[in-house]
Length: 66
Image (cartoon, rainbow, N blue to C red; front, side, top):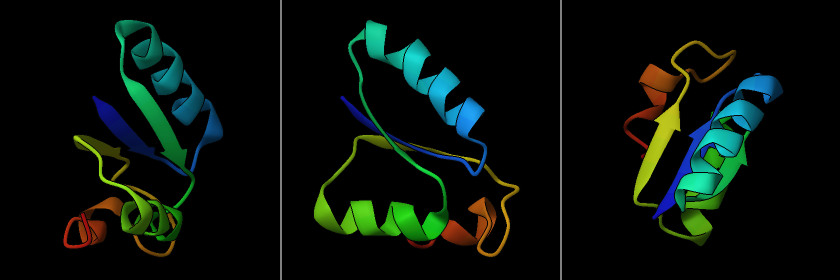
């Protein structure tokens, strides 16, 4: 399964990636919703984990893009 992790905090992105990868997930990360949208335009993911509190475009507003 492919997972996209979206969070403006790099330590959270890394923590989630390190937790999911050994479980067999292929994890990509994005530091902003804009970056995530770019990745979603290039490939598909089975699910997305997105922080709700981010500057500019937040996770709640991003749901329409995912």
